[in-house]
Amino acid sequence: MSTTSSNNVNGGIGSGLKQRTQEVLQNDFLRQAVAFTTDKLRTGRLSAAEQFGDWEEWRERGRVIREHTIAHLDYYLGQFADQVRSRGGHVHFCGTGEDAVQTFLRIAEEKQAKLVAKGKSMVSEEMHLNDRLKERGIDAIETDLGEYILQLAQETPSHLIIPAIHKNKSQIAELFTKEAGKKLPPETKELASFAKRKLRQFFLEAEIGLTGCNFGIAESGTVTLVSNEGNGRMVTTVPKTHVVVMGMERLVPTFEDVEVMLNLLARSATGQKLTTYTSFITGPRQEGDLDGPEELHVIILDNGRSAQLGDPQFQQVLHCIRCAACLNVCPVYRHVGGHTYGSVYSGPIGAVLTPLLQQDMKEAGTLAYASSLCGACYEACPVKIPLHDMLVYLRARKVKEGFTPSAERLGFKMFGKVFGNVKWYRMAGKAAYYGQKPLVRDGVIRKAPGPAAGWTKSRTFPAIPKQSFRDSWAELQRELQQDPASREAAASEDRGKDGVDR
Ligand code: SF4
Image 1 (cartoon, protein in one colour):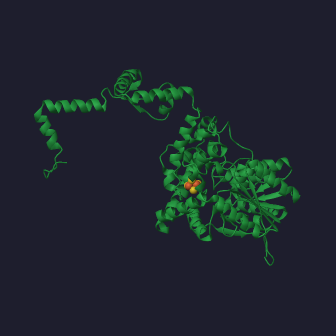
Image 2: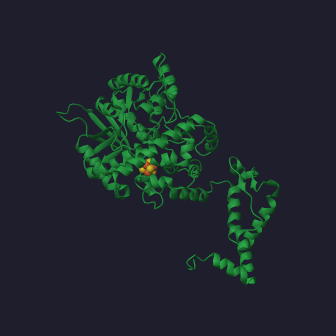
Image 3: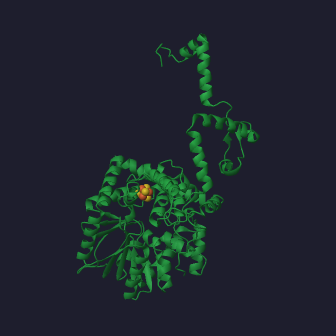
């Protein structure tokens, strides 16, 4: 079996965005699958929030907890690390993805590991860990069902919590058939049972179990994991060594705080009250414990996160709890799915997080344009992150750093000048009216030329009227002043039946 999760993305993050979008818009199955599942998740979230009671108050509590934690992150990181160590665990702070990879490789070498059983971890995707382990002859097996499917397909996740959102049963059966060496039918039960049997052997053979961390609880050094599959429990209890990889922002101060966050996370992610499994792991196996690893390592990764601390425009991005609610409501994500973004994180949170983590406005900064700025992401976010504002700040940053085409910069400069001057604005309106004439049919433009062509690819554009609203208004005023009878008629029209002036 191949354990390489190759990046199935065409072109660079920004430069390939248009091509990937065009390709995916031809893929009806993918678009329907993504829309169907995100719809289900979205309605599940809404009904779970309604049943829960004062959802806005819970959101505000979540926001306050995240804001407090991130504002005092240095303190809580220190407390968390002290607590993990005091329970016998090891903590490794890593500045970059490469540091984290090297740290993991050192642990793997020490344990003479040949097989790593992985639970779901987006941070390990960020580190491209599977590929790096493969280079050293170490197999990393994804044991989350969705991730396992993608590993067989050599693809990356296309959704934060439903990584194989774009695959159907027949495609999965095809992948599993190849792996099993015998025909498997596209039946959920059969496919799940094949995966279960197959993965069980990996849990037993793996020297290391690797997981992410949904929340680290600073007061006790506890790693909290939520999952709807039993693989998380197997990965954290069967192999002798458990390695946790987590972003440095994934902390909450206390157990009381994690209660709020778990309530928000499960409801926002899947519409559940709680996920099927919620595990609290505090240190490695202690004397008298029936299970658990002999050794626990926690790798805490910065990888561009600390650059957002203290930044008034972007610090709040560190409040994210990776629930994916913003993906499920985003009109862009719902049409194009996750691979179109070309980055580990997709949807509105990916469009903000990717350029910030990679500190790359030229390529990754283009993702900020993959949004209609409708603000649905903010309304869905359980911790109230203003992603729509951040997308605008990112666009401004990209322009400021000179990474927009010079024609576009010139165009907007002229646009600003024309719209900032009444005389020019009027002249431009007149010029546009006469200039559009060869293109107008039945009051609309169906095929615009040049850079405007994109607008009319799937919709018509209303023709610019001969008279602007301002001109019509001025004409009306003139008529009213000249003709007292029509002024009286207009005034009485504006009066209600009760004779009260409106
Ligand atoms: S930005 Fe908000 S809605 Fe989006 S994944 Fe993060 S917490 Fe969830």
